Amino acid sequence: MTDFTMPALGADMEEGTLVEWMVKPGDKVKSGDVVAVIETVKGAIETEIFEEGTVGELRVKVGETVPVGTVLATIIGTSAEKAPVEPASKATEAAPESAAETEYLPAAPAPVEGVVRASPAARKLAGDLGLALAGITGSGPGGAVTLADVQAQAPTISPQTAKPGTKRGFDPDAMRRGIAAAMAKSKREIPHYYLSTRIDMTRAQQWLAEENARRRIGDRLLPLVLPLKAMALALHQVPELNGFYIDDTFTQSEKVHVGVAIALRGGGLVAPALHDVARKTLDELMHDLNDLITRARTGMLRSSEMTDPTITLSNMGETGVEDIFGIIYPPQVALVGLGKVLDRPWVEGGRIEPRPIMQVSLSADHRVSDGHRGGIFLNAFDKLMQKPEAL
Image (cartoon, rainbow, N blue to C red; front, side):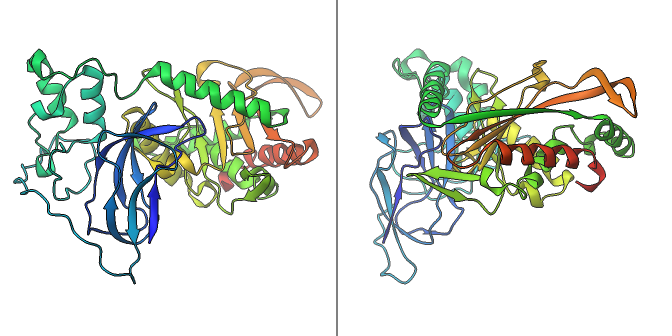
């Protein structure tokens, strides 16, 4: 028997609220299945399990807020005795799914008595508006409340059905406090060192323009995918920048999961992971990047995307910032920052000419690497960016 515990969905998380069980006792689960929705200051997170077996006891009730590490449920292994099954309430008939529905809803399990099924985005909006989900008729699978249901019904909900004064869902103030606490801890405990270099983006921009000219508009590549792939490949030469420092021990990661810093529309920041970046094509990265940004801004991230980034990329160029020297997000040991591409004087072949130049920075942990190794990484990054056709 193993325990499924409240995960730490980032270094700034100390507790979470269980807002929905996606399983019931007796259900079979496998690694990667979404079993619960957990609400943090960064929104509702679909939380996966990484065990295989049968759900035993659900130890935390919907609506409870518990610290990180609290046992939420027990999982009985496949070779163990079959778990007892609690009686479930009578299932409601599934309403036909609207063709216009665009938000994700997991497959509907048998409903648990007293629990209103809803997508994370719908639950978040209802919480922000102070509305009770019980007063909204769901049109999703199994009668689940969808985001469209909340948007459509919000103006007609009576004051009597609204939740009293509790603030749920995304809380910018709480997020800012959480980020500040994590960054203060990072600066206090991690001996940072900082390096930067300038990269000539002429070849990268020319190749990208020619490549996109051959593509349909919907298939074109964003400039960010090139440095994403280049930094992941450069880590092969300096692998000590890719991994986790926990309990005075560095554990190198075999795969490169890049945490991409994404600004949220309501304020605040998240940095969920793009998985296995070094092994993906530019087209795959483009698809995954668009999907990640969309889900981050609609409160539909997975727990694995919040817990396993092995290094972070912060792209400040789109805001007009020329340089960034970021703070490492523990337990990671490095962060790469990108500035705005600007035309600068550049010496090439003995001549001074204007070139598009990007400032790239590295913030790294001196307990794991040093400036010499960091310099090798930035040099490798530069060389890869000069051969965009090979990425």
